[in-house]
Amino acid sequence: MKAGRGLSTLGIVLIVLGTAGCAGGSGAPASTSAPPPGSSSGISPSTGTGTSTITIKDFAYGDPLTVAAGATVTVTNMDSAAHTVTADEGSAFDTEVKGGGGTASFVAPTKPGTYAYHCTFHPGMHGTLVVK
Ligand SMILES: [Cu+2]
Image 1 (cartoon, helix red, strand yellow):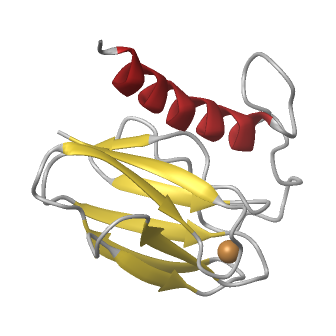
Image 2 (image 1 turned 30 degrees about the vertical axis):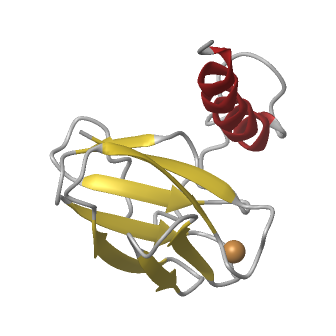
């Protein structure tokens, strides 16, 4: 039976969805809470560019990020608290990002797969990095 593996994958997806959706319920992520006008911090949404960015905000990593194998991933932390991006298994990646708009970067694994990660400071924070 292959049901076991399928359920395992589904479980990860549900955890990610649950983390990302706790503020907005069902439907689209609540990304409409733009910063107030005039207070631009120089950080623009990384949509459509070649850069792979994880933006941490409100103790959440956001949607799962898909990157190329070995790509450099930049992490931006909009919270006041410091966070880490730490692979759940093994030592695929582990980087600390200071709060207040701090940035850090790490190199994505070269082995394709789905990598769950978390914050060592806040065990409730979970994210997913997909390498292909
Ligand atoms: Cu954290």
